Each structure stands twice: as C-alpha cells, then as structure tokens.
Length: 409
Image (cartoon, rainbow, N blue to C red; front, side, top):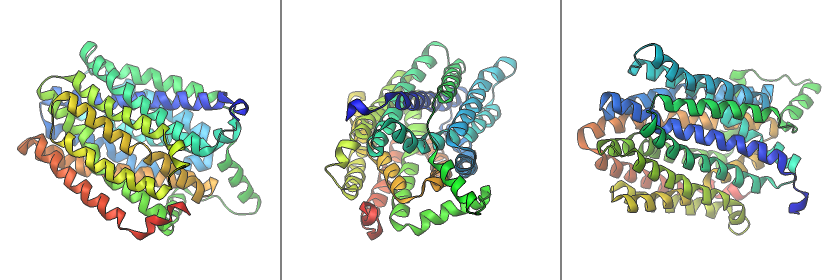
C-alpha cells in the first residue's frame, strides 16, 4: 500500500507545518525573554503574553469563515505572508526607535491576529492531502501533529541559541524567513478542496453561503449540539489554558533568574519531543485502543507527570518529566482532528476549527496574567503546584462526564 502513496502533497504540507512549528517555537521563547530582560518583571511578562493572545480570540472565528469561504490554500498562503511581516516588524521597529513594552505588546498582538488563520487552514487541508496522496486521514492526522511538534522541539532550541548569540530582537528574523518559505511551499501544493466543493454544491442548490458572523454562530451550534465533541473540545481547551502559563511565563521566569536560556530551551524541547512521539504514535495506537480510552490515558498520564515539573527539580529530572508530559499529551490533538473530521461536514470543518482555536485563545490570557502577578509575590513553584491542582480537578471531572463516552461513535 505504501508504494501507492504520493508523498509530494504530504511533503509540501508537512514541511510547511514544520516551519510553522519552528517559527512559533522561536517566538514563544523569545517574547517573554525579551520582556523579562527589559523589565525584570514576571508580572510584565505575563501581561504581555496574555494581552498578545487576545486578538486570536477574535481572529480565530474569522479564520474559520475565511477557510470555508475563500479556500484552504489561499488562506494558508496569505496568513504566512502576514505573519512574516509581523515577525520582521519587531527588529525593524527596534532599529528606528526604543522597543518598549508598549511596542512589544502591539507587535505581539499583530502577530497573534494572523496565526490562527494559518493554523486552521493547514489543519483543514489534511483531508484534501490525504485524498490526493492516498494515505488514510487518521494516519496523516498523527503525522501532521507529530511534525508540528518537531517544530516545537527545534523552535525553542533555535530561539535559545539566537538569544545567546544574536539577542532576542534579531531572533525574529528567523521566523520571518520561515514564514515566507512556508507561503511559497503552499503555492506549489495542488490538491482539491472538499470545503469549496461542498460550498459550490450548496450554492447550486440555492443555499446562500453564511456571513462571517453566521459562520461563527453555526460553528458554535455544531460543537454545542454534538455533546461528545463539546466535551472533548472543552476538556482540551481548559486543560491547555491552565497549562500554557507553565511554558510561556513560569518556566521562563524560573530560568531567567539563573540566566540559563539553554536550559529553558532543553526543557521546552523535551516537552515537544515527547509530544512528537505521542502524536506519531496515534495512528498505531488508534488501531489498538478506542478513542475513549486514548482520551482517558492522556488525561490521567498528563496530570501524573506534571507534578514533578511543578516541583522544579534539577535540570535532568525536569527534562525527563517534561518529555513524559509531552508523550502523554501527544495523541490528544490527532484524536481531536479525527473526531472533527468524522463528525463534521467538510464545508463546516473550518468554522469548527476556528471556534476551537478561538476558545483556546480566549482562556489562556486569564491564567497567564494571574500566574504572572501571583508568581511575582509568591515565587514560581507555588503557582506551578496550584496549576497542578486545577488540572487534576478538571481532568478527573472530564472523566466523569458521560457524553465523552460517545467519541467512538
């Protein structure tokens, strides 16, 4: 069967996916480091990360509408071009004027506007690439999330090296170049668009295409009316929101105190390394374990392995625990993709992914801001332990929700 697979479309999408992961990994480590280096304030870092995430909350539903309305490839290309411009803006502004907190917040917010569209478009392209290549969509889901995680392994390492060599401002030229290359690669990706085909069929039958607002409302209704999908999306969103300050605020604050950017890069790379293996293993795992049991295993293992990280052990132990967290969480995103693809019509998948992404942008800023302020007063470890308690409560609560049992249907 492997001899019948066309690897060209897969390669183009996944190289683009990899470059996106690297770019986002670089930005994730460089932005809080830039703020901490200039202000020496954990609260300021939390504030910048929190505020910069807010535009994604509004942009993500529009991204879903754009993907469904204009097409998956064109949205991916335009998004990458605009993301490249926003990345280059930071060193350009720094060249001409003082790059203060206001500038950093504004430019980080600008970048956050464009990221959801590219992320949504690439995810929506998975079924089209699977169809064009002859690979099963479940297997490609695992590959897609695994490759994205590889980018998150490379990105923090590259970011930490760039901070140590070029400085945090010049580091943004790397995402600029990678976003440009990513846009060029998608230009050469020639596959069908199931969403556009379904849209054309509906228009021929006289059904009007929804506006951006109607599209977002329809996405919410689809998720809300599908109890299993709703339970899974809320579980992933809430747990991810509670966890995210760990990587974006708390661990950077811990390692900035000791001036160890390389150590931070190693821990974040270990987290992503485990996620790679977990995501790539989803295709193998899905043939042997039900989706419900995969979800159960992810939730339990994630809270078990988070505790050692929260205790801030010596670097080797922290790297090992980080790898275990990534390994445990790795299958969750391919599982989410599979559930959406199996339960949502092709021309509605963009709006569902858009609402899902919007939810993920909406909640983390609250935790980022709160953790930054609290850590400023209490230190990092108490906040990490508090997050672990919250994650445990949420995970155990999700396991008791009956509707999540239907994700195998």
